[in-house]
Length: 236
Image (cartoon, rainbow, N blue to C red):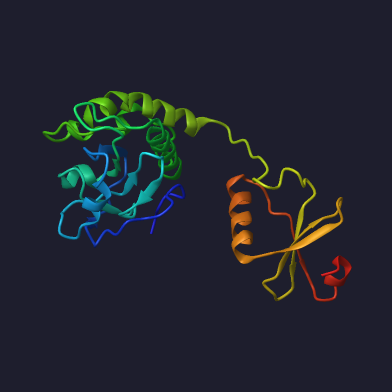
């Protein structure tokens, strides 16, 4: 199942989706909740024929619902949803403005850039970020968000084309020579700093987080896989 790495959780979809039947994903359609709360509850209701690929909350949190391989029930049109990844965004104020927070917009920009990168769009012109109202008789995504879709596309395009700048994962900046040692045939991993002469065991949760951080930063993980005899050299 394909879900953006930017999503930090999910809500139940209750099988409210269909096959895309081979349709190519060509755009992102932002929708708004038309409310400051309850949109996620509505989408997760098994008795409501509505769903989305992603939800974005006012604090910038992104959650998935329908995996990207499938057409969510969002726009009211099979053809439109089949070629789109749909995103429902929480409002920060009620009508008539239906504002959306800056954090939610920033999250949307990041999500669009991530989608564009993974689907190899190459760029994000305005036609790839469309409003629900362009395909149906609705005011969605509201008078505040709709006029911003062009600038959102431009921001996502800039982020997509920006050169990668790998940096040390958080927590590793102060230990430039940090090396990780994994004992042969064991799950035990140790963090070793030769310059400081320090070493400490790393738990499974922390080790998984370190691996993700190095991967996200585009850095090779400095790890030594040792035999039982070799571990004596490191004093572990």
